[in-house]
Length: 99
Image (cartoon, rainbow, N blue to C red; front, top):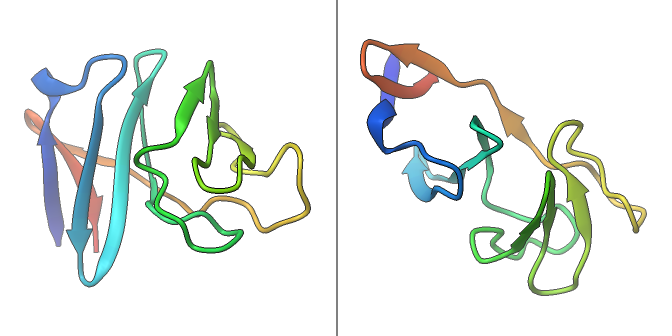
């Protein structure tokens, strides 16, 4: 089942959108014209990531400052689990995910 999150026309660099799907908080961001969907939760202590800072392709958690590589999801400066990334699906003029 396809769950639409956003229209493609809205996905410009710098875009950030939060969504709740089946009880999970998700974060959709666009960096370097690439849409990335991940759990809106820092794996370190569960802080929301939607207000983190972007430095190129690195997302830094605003609560404890841990930096995550958006390509691999791994933490760059701390020993913690990687970000949970989800696969995006495209349907017509919308992006979302398949459940």
